[in-house]
Image 1 (tube, rainbow, N blue to C red):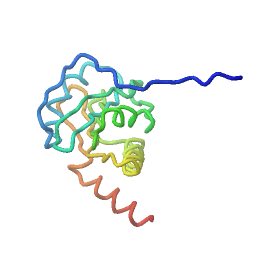
Image 2: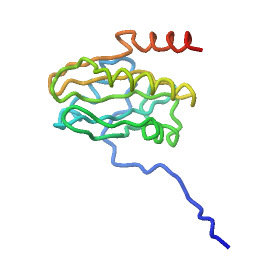
Image 3: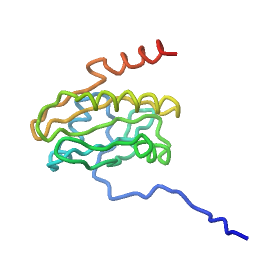
Image 4: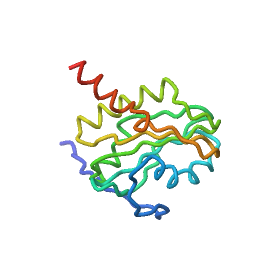
Amino acid sequence: MSELQIVNIRLVREPSIYSERQLDSPQAVLELMSKELAQYDREIFCILNMKSNGQVINMNMVSMGTLDAALVSPREVFKSSILSNASGIIAIHNHPSGNIMPSKEDVLLTKRLRKCGSLMGIELLDHVIIGGTSGEMFSFKEKNMLDEMIRTSERER
């Protein structure tokens, strides 16, 4: 007779360093995250798990990459979102070079996260790229790229 293992899955909280402030703009995301991400000399991809009222539930560092790339899997992205009961997420990563323009990989990842989140009922609210220590950012939402991804997905159906 083989033994069936029982597992317990739960969210483990780390010491808090973020505010309870509502994030109502890409600028608010930049103000919250820029100092944290400026510390790293490599790409860091993280998400903010969000309540429906715009407040941050928590932050999850999903991937620590190399100087100019980070491996990101939707499976890892949404794991903490599901456990946190998030209604949406904001994806954030840094470009240590200071160049805030999204790469082809950044655009493809954003499309993939948008689709995966839609299937699970967890909306991708924005994807913000922070440029090293420059204080500059690129917001997919601000550039209307998220809306275009929705229209493209609807045409593909």
